[in-house]
Image (tube, rainbow, N blue to C red; front, side, top):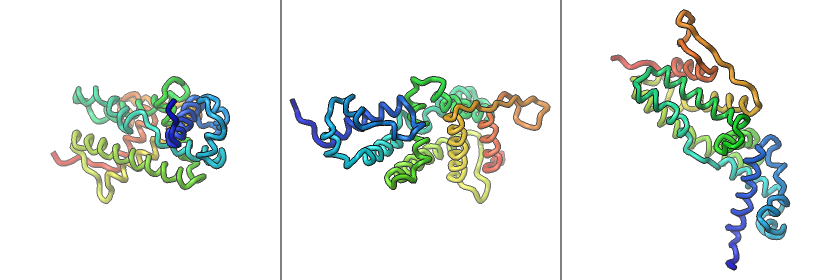
Length: 235
């Protein structure tokens, strides 16, 4: 039998811990992922783990970093799929915003409503761990890297929507500013979903002072950010 390298053993133990974390969520951080249980699941002894980590705290640190870096799809994949029909049908920008917002709300709420959704669990669990990123410098770095990757991808996504609908940024704002604001808004509503709170929905009539239709509160807030940050180009 081929002997595992130290890195292969480390990877095996971390992957087993990630599986438990995805199954249980991050409601109690990573403290409920006991190294002894992880080792039993993969058929290893404590000696194998303690040749890699000095103690369980070090294992929890590395497990948190791995979880924050875990993705099952690119950051914009779900949003791009959600708006495809609206774009293919040349529907107004409001329909695109509404579709993307509804998708985000549904995606975040799957943490409770669809426990089998690994992608949603990974997103919410990573978000929960990022709120406690001050615990370890390594976790802060991983959190910052994940955020930067997401913002970069969404800058490209938002830029393509601006070109499609003939918009530009208002001075002195940048697309980076808009993407950062949207990230904060989206993550805030995702935290609400992780808490099990229902997302507010709003029906706006043609006679109301708002964009007509059935909206999520996130969608209305996102529409407000578009108005604040962007303006239509002259036709």
